[in-house]
Image 1: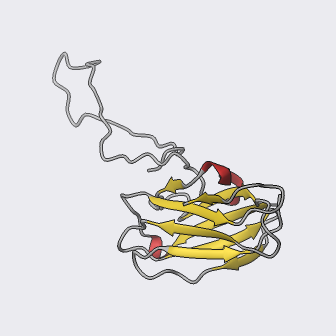
Image 2: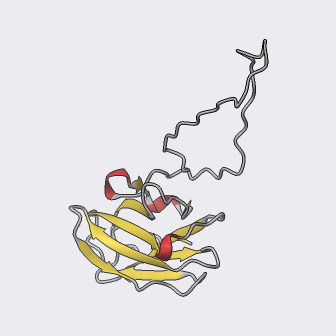
Length: 168
C-alpha cells in the first residue's frame, strides 16, 4: 500500500460470545513506510520538484497503481549548450533503474539504459530554459525498496544567475 491510496479493511469475527457485540478494539498499522510523494505514478499525478530546493527522495514500492515515479520540474536557466545532470543515488541493492525525460505534452525526449543492480544512475541533457519537463524513474521487474533513493540535480547557471547552482 502507498500513501495516497485508499484501501478497505474488513474485520470480521469468526465467532461471537454472548455479550461481545460492539466491543471496542484498537488496530495498529506497522511496517508502513510513507512516501511523501505518492501517488506520483504517472504524469497526471507527478510530484512538482523545485530544482532550486535541493535533492528529493522517494521509494520504489508501489505495485498497485504503477511502478514508476514521476517528477515535474521547470528547466533552469543554464549556460548555453550545457546540460542539466540528474543523479539517482542510494537505490536498493537489487534494483535496476532507468530515467526517462518527457516534455510537457508527454513526448519522449531521451532516456538512460537500466542501471546495474544497486548502482547510482546519471542522466545529462541540455534543456530549454523555463520549459516544463517530467522525469520518469522506472524500476525493472516491479521490485520494491524499503530504503529511499535520492534524486539530485546539478547544472551550470546561465547569465541570469550569478552563482553556480549545485544541489548534490
